[in-house]
Image (cartoon, rainbow over all chains, first blue to last red; front, side):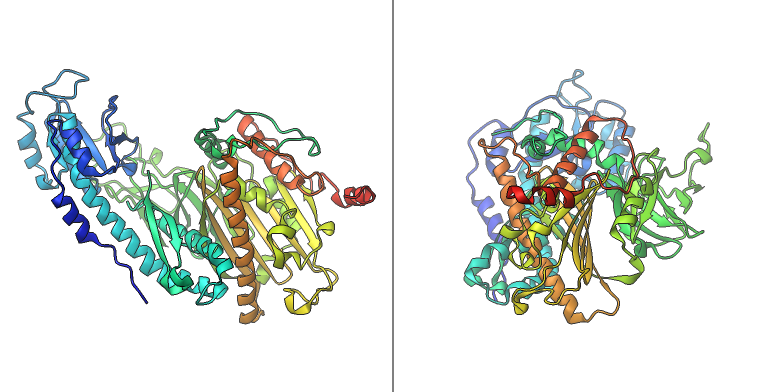
Length: 234
Length: 387
């Protein structure tokens, strides 16, 4: 029996070996490195900007990162960050307190914000980013998000394979098709596997692993050689 | 090619009506509206009664994305609440278990099983605050058979008045005879209505279900409808190769029935087992199906295994067809279709209800147990016409 392992380290090696894009625009540079992943951001203040590679969502539950917008009131902002971190949300802090209303870039940060934050239990290194410019902030958040996505993909795959497939569904497929699937039933076996494993994936969706089954294959028509691919929910 | 929803009505005459058009199965706007217009004001199955067998048993669930907790209180009464703390919208229950009280995971507000606020840490100094007005908000709850249902509409009539009484009169089920033996869930790539459309007719059985088709004769298959229920019925056929038959020696009263209770609860009734199906929309093109199989208490394990395998075959035949249909609905060649007046009145009935709920604020109830059509008479009168 072959166990397909997701090659996590080679993905990181590829990223490290990538040439740095020649662009002064941090967002463009980050998008090149991001490899097409769409960052889902929940802003605490509506943002009416269209930024390629970023989708602003309406719920923190749907977001990769929560963007806390600071326009004043350092203690309140620090408390909000502390609460969200306590809920397990990944928080990026945009300090535009020195900018005009509705502007998304400032010349400097709020001097009260640092002592306010250190007065909480927030470990500053757990912030996804801290910036005074929206696009630079998103670029900073975006680049390492691909690591996180690879990690989430690995977790989802291992859970589906070892928990749902090996634990439950493989016996159901064998019950209908035996150990070796007749050629005329390959599609039906794939449907069965995909639909059953998909139902287990749904349970992971609410816990931050947001994937759907994409393809199921049976190399050599062997049930015990089943392999599958996941697609991230967009 | 994007198909944008255009609202319309369904002709009440199945022989001339056109089906729901493709946009109803594809447009995210329809999906969102259905959540509010259909699923938020109908009785939704959330659990089995035996999952909340004793006082303190609770289970967290959701209906149209609304977090719900259902439980059995200290007086053994079933209750349902929004799983949302009135303080600042934290959750008061996660998963399932048994507790004497519910406690918000955010700041520790504690509620008894009747939903009343018991303890509020750190609220001294908060003014104009009445604890009696800050309990958990209740959700309507009811039961039918072995199942628990909730309704987000606080003014909804009891389930009995929707379809419960009619179901009791027409299904003839005595739930005490049946025990749950297997459960499975399936995530399928089609709109929820595609699956129910498929379920609500036997017209496709000869083509899509060869093993099932051996057990029945489509000429004997008929569909009755009531206000919120349709029931398909066919006697189990006699004859045929015994070795290939699921029911080789049927009795004179052995029949197969499929019941649909609007919008998304179905029951398959075979001579030796029943299964309950719950259809849950996930996205416009993804649906979660839950199947639970029941057998009578004295049935042999080998019989149960054989039946579940038989049902699995039928289920995957249906899933394959439904996923093909979902792809076909996107074709620029297809807008809407027609109904077989003889065989698809159940689908027509379902579509009429979907359109009614989408368009009407007030829903009229009708607890009559007289079926609207008498398809046996229709069948008899049309048999000479080569139907």
